Length: 169
Image 1 (spheres, helix red, strand yellow):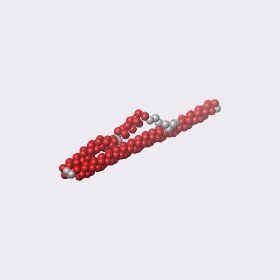
Image 2 (cartoon, rainbow, N blue to C red; image 1 turned 180 degrees about the horizontal axis):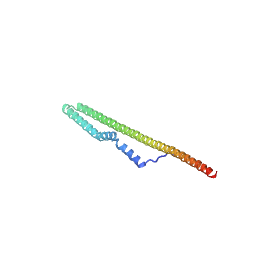
Image 3 (cartoon, rainbow, N blue to C red; image 1 turned 30 degrees about the horizontal axis):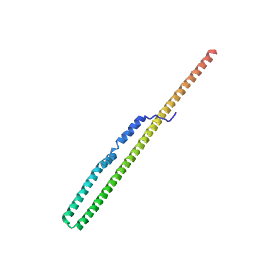
Image 4 (cartoon, rainbow, N blue to C red; image 1 turned 45 degrees about the horizontal axis):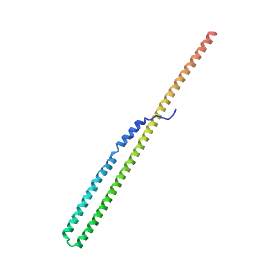
């Protein structure tokens, strides 16, 4: 008797799909972060633009002297450069976070898939063990029945043999 049990591959794949579809929390978070990333960057750039314009306007109002105005422009450029660097840093951090969430989601999916496979194997083994027990039980009952039949026939043979002896004698 083999220990093999057929598994419905379609059903298993459907179950794995179900597992994957029930894991949207992490994917949802990733999508939300991605969706909001552009908005955050746009807001940061608008804010930077406002800061720069305010700085330039204030500098122009306060400084009529060309040297001081030049200095203010240099500082505004430096500020603009700093804001761009900050924006880039935010973007890199956001992308890293998205990647981390994606990786965790993948890990969880693999874990769930492995658990599902282990459960399937456990169920198969349980079914095999149960079938083996049932067959063993039937085998014992059949053995008992055969023993009863043999005993009955032996008794019939011995009764027949004694009748033959009595009739001949």
